[in-house]
Every structure is written in structure tokens, then in C-alpha cells.
Image 1: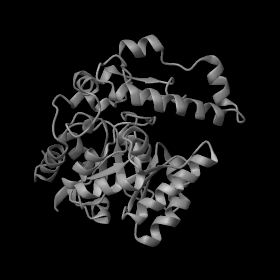
Image 2 (image 1 turned 90 degrees about the horizontal axis):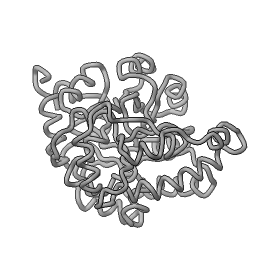
Image 3 (image 1 turned 180 degrees about the vertical axis):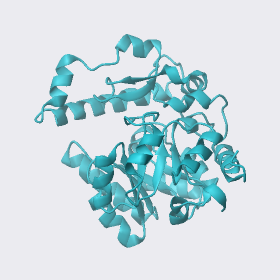
Length: 331
């Protein structure tokens, strides 16, 4: 390992390329996760995708990935659940993952202290999703090993900052930071590393791969979309989610209704509303992403679509990103 690829993140995980295939609902199927890890990056398991979308019992799904690669894989833990049942299920997933040898965890929302306390005694590493400094401070105080800086160009739930501003805001806390958002090409990856990021987390780029089991219509939409085609809708989870603008999205509208917005703001009803949105979005996103007819144009993606024009194998993406970032000139 040399040059830009030698970072605190790659060294801590023992990987060749500081490149993460981020956890995606519903696009994180086992074959995609394994392909990125096998090529020298690291794929991250999204437990609900593994179990609900692709139908694997969680432990057996992890063992399937392990049969496809012996290299490190990670797990995403969404730790702010709306019910006790969900929180207990996440805790069980974490325990099973540790038993199966997973040593990298990406936490989202909530306080990651309990995961840090489970993972660190076994030599594991925890990175926490952040969109601004106050969440980074909470992650640092909880003992995480690094941060995933989710910027305004990201898919999923983007943050409010651009990549440069976000790194300037959280980069002085003594923790490595990954760049999450807006990276679809090798030069963009190299630029993030030169800026001072310890690695990058990609999602959208890995949708447009043969290994991803999203529908051909979804992949074609990613390849055809430009940056201006990415819009934010509140109609999936109640908070803005980045999606590709399609006739379906335009017909549905981008804002939650006035009653939903009022309930989401109220302390006593927001958890109920989040549960309602979560159950609805799980079903609708699964159907849209796997639908081979293309009739359900409900597709998540980030602004990195601007640089994604070719379907490519996941391993080839990792190797090409590594080649460009590892070149002496950085290009």
C-alpha cells in the first residue's frame, strides 16, 4: 500500500483500498458486499436488506458472504430505533456479526456507546455517520474510532454541508473521516483523499454493477441521470431522502402532507410517524428496486450519478479507483 491509499482507515481495517461500499436499503445484497471486499475495499452489510429483501437468515447471510470472500466486511447498525423490538433486534444482529468475525461497524443515528462497548473488547472498529459537528462530538465522546462525513451530495439522507466544509467542521477532532457523498469517479475519490479524508464511502456507483441485484430499470436510471435529476423527497421517511426525479416522484410530490409534518414535529407522535413511514418505505422501496417492469420509478441515488455512465463490475471499480488514487500524479 502506498501514497494516498495508505490512511489510518485502511491500516486499521487491514484493507488495500480505503473505499467502502456503503450499506444500502434495498441494494446491499451479499454478492455485492463480498465483491467489493474481495477486490480490496470493504463492503458493508445492511441487515434489513439481507434479511427482508433477499430472504437470508442473518447468520446464514453472513456465512454466504464469507464463502464468497475471506476479506474483511462490515455491518451497518441503525441504532435509533422506534421500538424496543427493533432495538433488541439490532443488538442481536451486532452480537451475531461479532460471532461471525465482523470487526467493522458503521453506526447511524443515536448514541453509539453501547456498540463501541461491545466491539472494542474484540478488537473491532466503529465509525459513526455524521452530518455536522454536534453529531461528530457525540460520536467522539462515545468512543468511536472514526467518522463517516455524510455531505449534501450523498444519497440516502444527505447532510447540509459540502465535502470541504464538512471536513473543515469535524476534521480537528482527532478522528479519521470518510467522505460519503458525490464520489462516482476515480478522480473524485483521489481528490477526497488529497483533501484529507481517510477514505470514501460510495453507494450509488455500486448500484450500477452486475453484482447488485437492483433491477435493470433502476441501474439504467442511474446511468442516465445527471446531478440536477436528484431531488429530495420527504414522502419516503418523513425527512428528506435523495431520489432520482421520475414521473412517479413528480406525481407523488416531494413534501410530506401538513398533518404528517405536524405529527413529525411533536415529541409524543414523531416516533409513531417514523414507524409508519419506515414500514411503508421498506415495502415500497423493495418493490421499486427489484421490479423488472420499471413501473415503480422510486429510486434512491446521490449526485454522484453525474459521473456514472457505464455499468462496471464492482471489483473493477475498486481496482480502477485504487489505480488512479495510487498513481504518483494522483490522476
